Amino acid sequence: MSLASNHSILEFDGVSFMYQRDNEFIHNLTFSVDNGEFIGLLGANGSGKSTILKLASGILRPSRGSIRLWEKPLQLYRNKDRAKLLCYLPQLLDMNVLFKVRELVSMGLYPYEIIPEMTVAESLEMVGLMEKSESYLENLSAGERRRAFIAMTLLQGAGLVLLDEPLANLDIKYQIEIIRLLRELRDKKRISIIMALHDINMALQFEKVMLIKEGKILGIGNPEIVLSEDLLKEAFDVSIEIRRHGFEGAYLKGLKS
Amino acid sequence: MSKIRILLLILISILIALSSLFLAPKVINPFQLDTTARNILFFIRLPRVTVAFLMGMALGASGAVLQGILRNPLADPYILGISSGASLSAAGVLLSGFYFFGKFTIPLAAFFGASFVSILVGFFGWKRGGLWPERLLLAGVGLSFLFHAFLMLLMSISPGERLGRTIFWIFGDLSVADWSLIPYGFLLIILGFIIFFSRAKALNALILGDELAHSLGFSVHRERLLLFVSISLMTAASVSLGGIIGFVGLLVPHIMRFFIGADSRVLVPTSAIGGGILLCMADLIGRTIMQPVEIPSGILTAIIGSPYFLYLLRRRDVLGK
Image 1: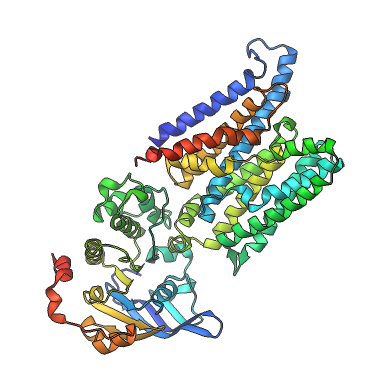
Image 2 (image 1 turned 60 degrees about the vertical axis):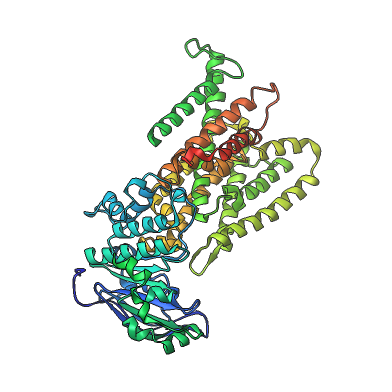
C-alpha cells in the first residue's frame, strides 16, 4: 500500500446519498482519483461539493454504491488506519480556540502510536510558520491560520488530502499563497489533493477539475475542456463569458512565480 | 513558561491548604498539639480541606472537559441539570426529615439525583447513534428548569425551620465534611479523571469540531459519550460531597485558559488544581470572617472569583495580545 502505487487511490462507484428519505442529494457518482492528482471540485452553492468530500472522508456513508480507498472499501478501515491515509479539512476553520500553532499542528500525530519521521518543526517550516509556532491561533491572520491547519494535515502524513473551500474568505494574496503551497507539497510528497471551490477563475488554474451540479458530475478532466461556457452556464445558472487570452493574468503569474 | 505557572499553582494550593488547616478560625500550632487541637485538626479541618479540594478539583476539571465537548464557553457541569436533580433529591430529604441511611442519606440522595438527571440528559441528547452538543445543552437547560421548579415548589410548601438548612446545602455546605464519605467521593472523582486522561487527545480533537476529530481518526460519538460519563461521575461525586458550588465549573477553566491555553492535557489538570484552590480559599474565608456564622462556600467562590475573572477579561494581554 505504498503511496507511490499507480492504482487509483480513491474510487467512487455508483455512489448515491440522501440526507432525507426519498430525497436523493448525490446521484450515482462514479469517478476515481489517481496518485498525485490535484483536483478542483467546482460547483455552485448547494451543488454537493461538501457532501462529496464528506462521503470520501467517511463522515457520511453512501446510501447506495461503494467507495474504495487504496482499493479497500472505505468502511472497512479502522478509524486510526484511515486517518493515516486520508485527511479532511472542513470548511470554516476560523474558530477561536486558544491553541498554539505548535499544539494544533502536533495533533496531526494523533493517529500514530509510533511517531513518524516528520516532525512538527519540519511541517511548520514547510508552510512557513516556524516563527509563529508559539503564537495562539486567534492571533494569526486568516491565511496563516489556514496554513497552520495545512501543516497539521501534512504531519498527519495522509496520501489523500480533501480540502473543503480552503480559499473561502481569503484575500487573493493568500489564495495564491495556499494554492502554491499545496502544489509544492503535492510535488514534494506525491500526495493527491481534492479541493472544493466555487471560484471559476481559480478553477482554471487546476490540472483537472470536476464540475458538479445537483449532485451529478457535469464534466471531469482538463479545465480547458470541462469549463466550457455551456457547461458553466448549466452549473452556475448564469451566462458566463470566458476569455482565455487573459490566461497570463494575475492569478497565473502569482502561481508561477 | 507554562511549567513555571503550573508549579506556582501547585505551590499556591499547598499554601492555601496549610493555612486552611492551621490558621483559621483558631490558630493551631502543628508542633504543639494537645488532644483537642489534634481532634479539631484530624476530624474537622482535614476532612473539610480534603472535601473542598476534591470538590473544587472535580468541578474545575469537569467544567473544562464539558466546555470542550460542547464547544461552548458558557457550559458548566451544572448546566446539564445535574445540580438541579441533586438539589431536588437532597432537598427532599432535608425538608422531609427522613434520614433513612443516617449521615449517608443526603450524599446518597444527591448522588442518585445527579446520576438520574445525567442519564436523562444523555437520553434526550442522544440521536442517530450519538450525543450531540446542542441537544445535550438544551436537554440540560430544559431539565434544569423542570427540576428547579419542583425544588421551588417543595420549598414553598415546607415549614420554615428546615428551609434554612436546605438553602445552606444548595449553596454549598462543607460543614458536613466527614471522613466516612471521602473515600467514595475520591474513588468516583479518580475514575472520572482516569477516563478523561485516556481520552485527552480525543477531547482536543473534538474541540476542533466533529469532522476534524473524525479526520484525525477518532470515533466521535464514542469519545463524546465517554467524556460525558467522566463529567457525570465527577460532578455527581462533587455534589454529593458538599452540595452545589457555583462559579468553579464555569469560570475556573476560563481563568486557566487565559494562562496556559486550551490544550486539554494541561488545561483539565490545571483547572482541577485551580478549582481546588478557589474552593478551599472560599471555605477558609467563609468560616472565618463572620464567626460564628458561616457563609456558604458556593456564594463565596463567586464573590472571590468573579471580580478576578472580570479583571482578567479586561487585560487579555496575558495571552500576549
